[in-house]
Amino acid sequence: MGETQRNDRRRALLIAAPRLTAWFAANRRAFPWRESRTPYKVLVSETMLQQTRIEAVLKYYERFMKAFPTLRALAGAPEDLVMKHWEGLGYYSRARNLKKCAEICAEHHDGKLPETYAELIRLPGLGPYSAGAVASLCHDEAVPAVDGNVLRVLARFFGDARDVRLPEVRKEAEDVIRAVLEDGLVSPSLFNEALMELGETLCAPKGKPQCECCPWEKICRAHAEGREEKLPYRSAGAARAVEEKTVWIFICGGRIALEKRPNTGMLRGLYGFPMTEGTVPDAETADTVLRDRGIAPLRVLPFGIAKHVFTHKEWHMTGYLAETEKPVPGFSYVTAGELANSYALPSAFRAYRDRLAAGR
Image 1 (cartoon, rainbow, N blue to C red):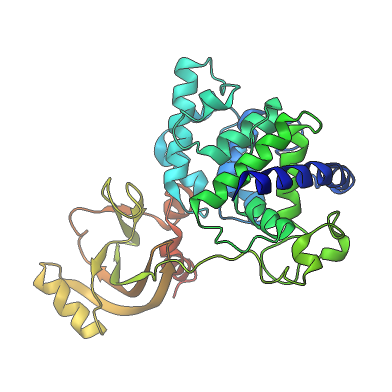
Image 2: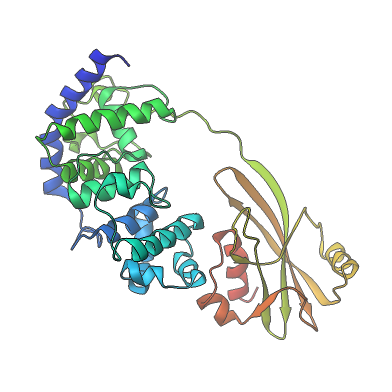
């Protein structure tokens, strides 16, 4: 994109900004992190909201903030407890980074988040979007906060058919927003949040955009050209690798076996049901497999199939419930109540946890 086009986009966005902020002021939704806003609340909410809809996040946010109301509370909490209160959101590395961030702030920043983008971006887990969100929404710093919602809104507004996955497209979006904010005619906090809100509501990714309600209906290029449902263009990502797994539900004396996964790889450091590579085709074969490994089950029952989709791979799982007279060495055995209340079980195992809870 040339300099002339960049300047044209800056001017267009600058002219459009008052309509957007006026719309936001009239239609702003109430959320816990918007009321009595603090940098910590914004950081937690924005971390949770990455790749997750607001409606799905609300219950997790309230649960997490009740357990860890301040950065210092989060910094001092055991990691397993933090993981338990993150359970269901996925992307557990974000929770770990959030805790690391809290520990650094407790030690070096008097238990508070730094106020500037330049300092925030150095903290673990804070990328350009999260740092920009905290700096702009809480301190009105003139920095962009560009996520997928904002990229979609700008692609439609400018009629830009380029691939939004390209780093240069994101950088140009950040540059044009930064130029508008540095102009000083619009509040960075108000403008950034209004852009996010537009992308989460009227200019949503799925279904037909609600153009008739949009403050930019008359000035949106994609709408004028009838291309609003065709933009943004997003290239297909690489095909997910499929991995076959066998999940073992070991029961001994009414207690359930869990294994803590290694500190590297998928779901690192989290508790889950024991799992082996490959598919065991039936209960009879499963019984033989266990006996070959020195495990003498009282009985082995099929426990269903399940699939879990990660960003870059899929697990296709076949489960077996095996009752044993003695605990299988190497695992932690917990009660059903402890499994429900004390251990963060990744959503990859949710189908098997739910079947256990239902007594199937």
